[in-house]
Image (cartoon, rainbow, N blue to C red; front, side):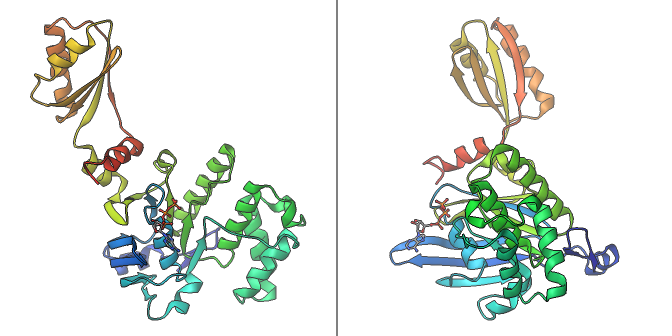
Length: 333
Ligand code: ATP
């Protein structure tokens, strides 16, 4: 094992080679179900989060994200199912997993009358971190979240975004190798969110496994390695981002801009064997295309042959938001 600058233990190259490519996942659930009375929050949910991944759990309000994260953090018991975190069966021995996980809830309360450092010191003691390491770990955590200058500020005087950062510092304090983050950036301003993403990437590079929930999809695309889309307690799709894109895309989106006759353009485009769908938005026609990029020019040729007055033509890379919207549509759910 090697220790990175962020303090997270990482498997060194030799260790990784010995371990082979089939490392057990950092988090694994099998047929997980959670009922709250009549409400079924999780249905038969089987999930694998690979070690070292940044896994974005995406879903609308009420999808079951918080329920899943609270089960993984040992704060809630499932109705049935299996759960392994860091190789530990957390339903049998929940206390064994605590040193390995850092959980940040979407709702949290802080001790208003403590100073920032005192608040962290309190939790460091809870984690039984000895006095010699406490100061260093507190300083490192404050530095990581950008609160060093607020070390002596009363918690009650912090802004919402700063409170969120402090809560994140507390989550990192004992250097867990698995982070469970429930909508952690919701109170942070745009610049702070960018910094926060960079910090998550750094922790990911240091070998930390991160499971992060969100319903703000566009924010997840550039830093997550894996994505799971959850809705009504079911995992609709899960895997590396590329894989999820492939699964859900089923084709490219071609956007054509026309001077006039947009309806006619859509009609012509529908004659093409690889066009699955054509939608008109004023002077723009969006074509759902099932072919490869090499086949795209054949669409231009067809439109030109029919004298469609094209002034623009582009292949649009669709983001997770559009994928998600498709998944969330009634005919799919
Ligand atoms: P959000 O994005 O709004 O936080 P979520 O994806 O985190 O939503 P959960 O909070 O896990 O979803 O809720 C899943 C379902 O379980 C919802 O229907 C919710 O109303 C229900 N639920 C959650 N907690 C409880 C509870 N303590 N008692 C009863 N029902 C609950």
